[in-house]
Structures are given as structure tokens and as C-alpha cells.
Amino acid sequence: MADPQQTRVYKWEGEWVDWNRASASALAIRKAIRTAERAYAVPKMKIWLVKNNRSVCRMDGRSGKGLRLPTFYDPSTHAIHIRPRHRNIATALHEAAHGICDAFFGNVDHPEFPAHGPLWLGIYLNLLIAAEVAPKNALIASAKQRGLKYAPLGKISPAKIRQSYAGLIDRAQFV
Image 1 (cartoon, one colour):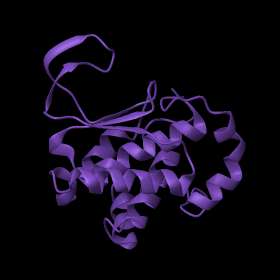
Image 2 (cartoon, rainbow, N blue to C red; image 1 turned 30 degrees about the horizontal axis):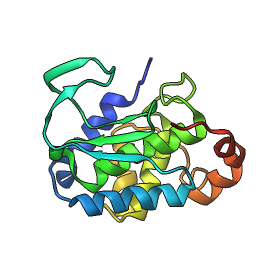
Image 3 (cartoon, rainbow, N blue to C red; image 1 turned 90 degrees about the horizontal axis):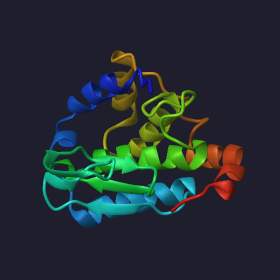
């Protein structure tokens, strides 16, 4: 599925020093994700803090011993898998934003809602700002400088999105 912003989002995240190293405890990561879930009133996600950077399974469920896998949100299980090297608040919120988008809009790779598209990035920015990961002005300026498109933060804020899309959550199916 086409995800035109994915590479630019990853490069943008790579420019933030604390977003590129393990800088948060397991408790802090869980707290950040639970706070995001409560803010957007979505069902709880499973949180898997993977013990090593190599895994014995792949996202498609096949054996893959020794493969290096990314941190990711799995829509089929409504779970976030976080590798040790990615244990920081920004990465946790990145994956939580995928889970929130999945809860409201369905499959994160739907053509109208690319996985790293404007709706997702608007939610992600709101989460980063609320968690005080970086100042709002710095986040917005850097995203604009990188040409990233995001939904207006006021229209995708927790209160606004809950109001606009409340029925979607009621009908959502989670494992």
C-alpha cells in the first residue's frame, strides 16, 4: 500500500536525539501508551516489550529466527511490539498513534488513511505535545520544514475526534 510520507516521517524522527535511543523505562512507556488510549478513549492495546532486538517470529507469523524486526503496531492483535533499542516515549507514542488510527479508521494501510498520513501524523503530534516530548512550536516547525502533512491539530485532538468519530469506536472489533 502506498504510504507517501513514511520515509520523510522516519527521517524527521531521526533528527530528534532522544527518539533514537532507549531512554525510557518500561513503566514510562506503558504509562505513555495508556495515557494516549485514555485521551482518545480507545480500547487498550497489548504492549509487548520485546526482550531482545532479534526475534524468533515475524509479523506474518512465520518463523524468522535471527531476523531483526522493527518496533511495530500489529492491527490483527491490537498490540504494540517495542524492541529494546526503541524504548523511548516518542516511539511508544508513534505506535500508539497507529493503534488509535486503527481504532477510528480501520486498517492502518487503507488507501484513504495511509499509515503515516495526515490523520495519523496529527494524532501523533497531539500525543507528543501532550506528553511534552518537545515544545509544540519546535515539533510543528520541524514537521513543516520536512514537508510533512498533518491534519489540523484542533480537528484531530482527543476531544474533537471522540466527538466526530464516536460511533466508529463503538463498532470497532478488536481481538
